[in-house]
Image (tube, rainbow, N blue to C red):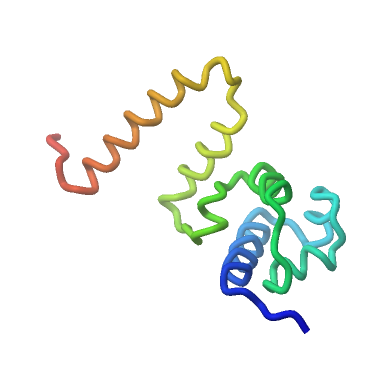
Length: 120
């Protein structure tokens, strides 16, 4: 029997949460990921790690950031952040510098508000 690594367990639980939130069964998501349902189950249980290529597909399919899968960021506030992250991945490379400037400015505003620096 393979030992479960703490990281695999955490990531697996986060993948399961995101999958359920998106309304997919293990069978449906595993088909889209081109892996077996048993393999997806092993990932979600933490008995198997997830390949980066599979994680990227999961992020795109579930419209969630890799940050959320790795660190378990959840909750309503992060929903919009996950959507933005998923969209940013798909931006034409030609426009990424402009998008990066816009997102950086948005993050600065959000961080200032969290620190109570909102002047409104």
